Length: 289
Length: 289
Image 1: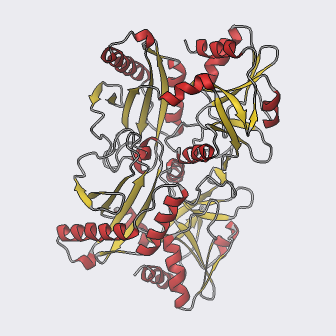
Image 2: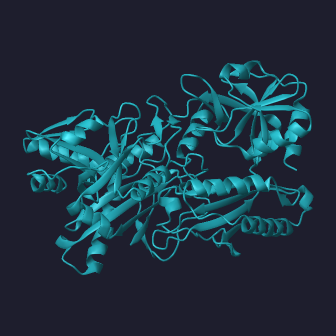
Image 3: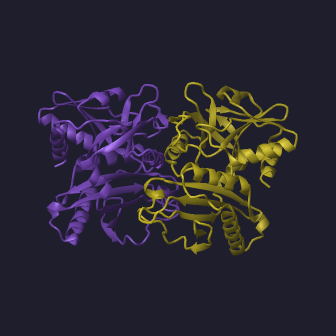
């Protein structure tokens, strides 16, 4: 299901998924000049909504796009999700889906942002990774983000994912499911291709690398840290050296629709399942409720 | 004018520019996962075609996209350009236009590449820069491309231009027309935002930075070097330090549709017009014939 969104706070209009809606001169297409968020739909509602709205707004600001109207995106998301659940004729409590928001700088000829949202099933391979975990290879990300370039907007979640897709093709060619990017030279852990890395340590401790150049602030990771802290876990944003991942209790990739996938193999080495695997999975999943 | 291109060597189909043709799940849109070339049309024909075809093929290979059929792209470009000239009802010798080829990885649901080409007038501000030159500010590009990441495909001309667009917004905010990227720390000259840098030195010598990480191989620059060499110029691909640009005879940004624009101001310092300005402009322009 796809809905076109009036970008300045207005309404949505249902669009046939069998009809194209993007013009040849849309900056989202010609330049990747746009932003997106992927939101989990569970139990009939969008999860972790405030953190997605906040990041969407930060992305827009970083790219000097018009500020998304948060109340509007919340409302159109709720409408679209309600349609989706009704048309699937299932108990909404049992429905899971993936809702993607996109806003581009729009057509060259109009200058008005193009915005839309989609709601669709979560792919089977993503669901499977929640249970089966993922095999991961590490790689430098191919470029080092410079920390102090005022115009760059590196903290935006843009449509520029060609390099990410190339990394995933490379990983799959090696029999792995995903990559974890590491900093060249230092082997400092950055992030997954489309996920944050959380390391579980002995003594109810969680750690993730602090967001910054090369590390996008994760909405799921933030929700997990908020919730886990309330449950008595010690949560810290602090550098992780690649070597630490091999010896820790468990390593997880977290992101909105996959929720979490345990890293079962890292660069060919098995990371054995911890005793508290089910507990960690429940902790992360509950953090999104 | 826009034409959809059958991606495996077939025909073109004219598409109304007032009708969208790209679907919500096209990887070119959702991931910037695609490639493009911008080709100058002059005197009724596409210029520098072989170099564009070669780079288009290299971009496709770098991104593991199907190999574009060069003979097809040459043919559909000729057809589209002929239509364009006929419908403008002008002497083709007087028509200039911009032809853009795009190929994406295609829709998620089909996996077939989406390909199209457009032909349209060259924007007035681009034409003006040929005569008036450009004011330029320098900046690090915000990220350093790592030279040895096998999967990255950094030599591809992809649709991932969000950072480039941000750099241009920043430059315009400073009253400049364009940027030249320089390497952080070393101040080595890389390239313009969408152009190659050519430095003209005393004694009929041209220099440009060698292509490599952070420097896309320029089709116009290559044509200029081929032609100028035949005219007795000494042409060299060699590192340029930023400081050298201030003292040299003249500095030019070259790219397919703008052809060339002399840098008249660099970081606020005037670069005076050289005695041979008209000669250089003619040399570069003739190189594309």
